[in-house]
Every structure is written in C-alpha cells, then in structure tokens.
Amino acid sequence: MLEIGILFPSVLNGLTTGAVYALVALGLTLIYGVLHIINFAHGAALMVALYAVYLLKTQFGIDPYLALVIVVPGMFVFGYALQRGIINRAGHGKDENILLVTLGIAIVLENLALLVFKSDTRSIETGYTLSTVAIGPAIIALPKLLAFGGALAASALLLLILTRTDLGRAIRAVAKEKHGAKLMGIDVEHVYAMCFGIGLACVGAAACFLLPAYYVNPQVGAGFVAVAFTIVVLGGMGSFVGALVGGLLIGVVESLSGLFLGESLGQIGIFAVFIAVLLFRPQGLFGARL
Amino acid sequence: MTDAIRIAGFALVIGALTLAIDSGVWLTFIMMALYAALLALSWNMLGGFGGQFSFGHAAFFGSGAYVQAIAQLSVGWNAWLALAAALAVAAGVGAFIGALTFRYGLKGSYFALVTLAFAEVMRILAVSVGFTGGGVGLMLAPSESFANMQFASRKGYIGLVLALVVAALLVTAWLRHSRFGAQLQAVRDNEDAARAIGVGAWSVKVGAITLSAAFMGAGGAFYVQVFQYIDPALVFGPASSVEALVAAIVGGMGTLWGPVLGAAVLHLLAELTRNLFGQLPGLNMIVYGCVLVLIVMFVPNGLSGVGRSVRDGWRARRG
Image (cartoon, rainbow over all chains, first blue to last red):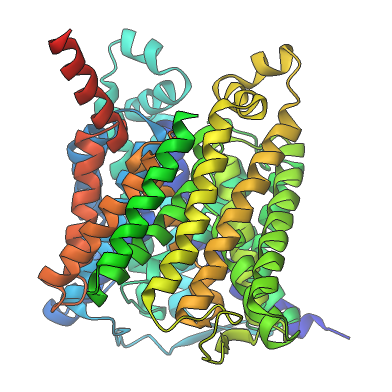
C-alpha cells in the first residue's frame, strides 16, 4: 500500500514544479487571451532567458535571484520589440502567418543558441544548489521551494497588474472587444506589444527561479512549451486563475504519474489529462473569461 | 480534366529529369523535395481544403513509419504489403482522432493543440511499449530488391515517391472538383452555413482527415524505406508536422500546386543554406528561419498566389 510518506513528498515536489509551469503558462495564456495567437516561440524565449541567467552567473557572478531585476525587464523589452517589430508586421493579421512567424523566430533563436553555446547541457553552481528543507516527512530542495514561492509571488503580481491598473484594464478591454477598445482611444498595437512583453517577462522570471535547480541547452524550451499548452487549455484559454491552478495541478499529475507509471511514462499523464479536458470540457476548468 | 493533364505533364517532366540526371546530389534533392511535397500535399487536404489546422500530423507519419517497419521485421510481410498496411493504419488513426475531436466540436487552436497532444502521446507510447523497439528504435535490414522496396539507385526511390505524389495530386484535384471537395470547402468557409444547407460537417471532416492521414502515413513508410532506421522522436516528434504545414502554408493553402511549390522552394532554401553555411552548426537554420519570416512578411498569401497575381497582371496588360 502506498502511504502518505511516499505520496506527500511526491505531491509537494509536483507543486514546486507546477508553480514554475504556471508562470510559463501565464505568459502564454496572456498572449493567447489577448492576441489570440499560439506563440510557438514561447519555449525558445524561455531558453533565451535561461541562457541570460546562465551568462549573468558565469560571466559576472550575479546570483540567479538577483538576476531577476535584469532578466525580467530585458525579456519584457525583447518581447515588446519582437511583437511590434516582427510578428505584427509579418503576420498580416492572419492566424496561419502568425503561426509561421513565431515558428520562424523559434527556429532562429534555438539555432542561435546552438551556434553560440553548442548543444552542451549546462547548469550553474550556487551555494544553495544542494541545500534541502524538511517539510513534515518530505525533504525538498531549497531552490525548488524558492521557485515555488517566487512563481506564486510573480503570478500574484501579474494578476494585480491586470486587475488594478489602467494598463490591465486596457489589456482586458482589448481582449474582449478590440474595435470597441480602439474607439475608446486605446492604442491596440501598444497593448498587443505590452502583452507580448509581459508574457516574455513571465518567462524571464520563470528562468531565474528555474536555473538554480535545472539546466539549459538549446532544446530545453520544447518540453516546457508542450506542458504550458496543456496548462493553458486545462485552465481555459485566456484565464489567468486557470493557468495558475492548472499549472499546479499538472505539476502534481506529472509527479504522481511518474511515481505510479515510472519515469518514461510519466509525461503521458499530462497528455491524458490534456486530451480528456479538450474532449469533455474544451472551455477548460475556468472557462475563457479574462 | 486540365488538372489531370497538368499532373501527367508534371510526372513526365520529373520522370524525364530523373532519367537524364546522374548527379547523386541532384537526385537526392529531387527525392527529398518530392517527399516534402507529399507531406505538404497531405497536410493541405485537411488544413488547406478543410480549414482544420493540425499540428500533429506526426501522429499519422509515425504510425505509417512504424507499421511499415514492424510489418516487415516482426510479421515478415513483403514491403509492398507493408505499405498497404501502413496506409490503412495511418488512415485508421486519422479517422479515430478525427472522429473523436470533431465529435466534440473542436476547431481552431483547440484542434491544433489536441492533434499535437495525440502525436506526443504516441511518441511516449512508442518509447514505452515493447513491439516498437522502445527508445532504441527499429532498423531495416538492408537488402536491395524490388520486393523489399529497396533500390540501388536514388532513381528507384524517386519513382516510388513520385507515384505517391501523383496520387496525392490526383486526390487534391478531385477535392477541387468533386461534390465531397465542395462540401469540405463549404465547411471550411462557414461551417454553420454548410450545415444549414444539409452538409454533414462531421463526416466530411472525418473523411478529409482520413485521406490526409493515409498520405501522411505513406510519407512515413517512404521515410523508413529510404533511411531504414526510425525511433520515436524521429517519426513522432514535431519535425514532420512542422515540415508538412510550413511547406503547405508557404506554398499556398487550398491550392493544387502550392504545396509542391512550397516544398520545392523550402527544400532548395534548406539545401542552399546547408551548403553555404553548413560549417557552423545552427547557422544554416538561422538563415532558414529568417527567410521563412521574410517570405511570410512579403508573400502573405503563399507563393502560388504570387504566380497567380503576376499572371493576372500580365493578362490585364495584354488584354
């Protein structure tokens, strides 16, 4: 029989992974909810952010958590420029073209990383990489616990921005009714670019919390983006609360199905949930409200 | 009828070119461009004519590839019989995924993502179950003979893939002119209106995904015969899905020749960048990605649209 002693650490581990998933998914759902595009460059953006954190640590000795103040604004600017300069211009407002453009950007970014860093998998050493904390019967790596707290804090901050600020109101207005928002004097192009920027800023934050307990290579984004899509659909496309809850849930599902089905089949739990949700509740757990 | 004549002309030109050329590089180029065209044509049947964007055509590609390999290795079938089985199984997988997803009314981004998920599930399953050889993959025993569908020269493979491309072109031409094709395009343009005039949207879409999957499965089977090795990441990974949809969109969705044109241009581009910048890993793909974005930026309606507007402009000037 399985006891709480095995289940509890597994659930806890899943929650810590899930919080980072949620942060990546929040960016994706924001971009989907407002711009209605599936951003295939999201995983590549995460990879870029991870390399940025890696470089800041290895070249300048900047701690990954301190790097937040550099990487998050940096990714925001990168995202804003990408949307305004390339995606908006090349997409011509056609879904299939925007898809190809984000795909093209992903190809360029991934191969740029391959060119510069080669295909080696890299990680960083920090004083706390191997530190652990005991919570009840479970022992959790300190960086994972910090990632959990940090991801939740970042998500809360994002929700505050969206619900309490003028920018947030403008974003929600554009998401609901683009033309109406334009007539009210909202600069839609600017809001689009802001959303893309914020979406990538989330990814930047995720990278800072992730790297102390993780690794980076040019293909690292691909695995995350498949999971992030799952979360976005599970939570309801465009729903922020949904992305948060969905992220945590998927983290736990992955951890538990890994425990019960073994390493190689672990991820199948995620996709089984994904397909079941799409078929039986395609609007997701929290509908498509924004 | 004109479509059939043009397709015959295309087959004759490619066939004659293949017989005339002796350079291995060019023969490989023709073979790989035709193979890419096969994938793009298959994606176009569902994506271009049916308006259903699949990100998971790898599910059909991989099914075809694995059936082709397993039927020969474990069951001991002749390669041609295996090809028939590969087509049938891929079509069956397509019909199953289509029946399920269209039953629940999934479309747009949701359909795209669920097909992606099905492909991922199949990749993970292929790693985990025994008869696929797991993560190690499967290898065909090299033995050149017609019965084994293994040829000493690229020319044999070109004949094979050309036949498949011609079949796909004929089916596409049929979609352009048949009742079924008209219904499919009506569903693409406005599903509610199509329903209102009595089109069975569900069965039409399932029909389209079945056809599309069969040809994608043929692409997978061809892949096995040429490269003689597969593993789950190779055939169920996103590469073939992406290759199929990019070529179809770049060439022009919902057209007969667009996917062929897109496949040829993109393949030429990939070869050029590989030859020019191949010394540094990654550089060729960077150039490829940039050109892809530029094509989308400047040719938003696909390459075949350019040909049409140039021709129209020329006619307008003459007339």
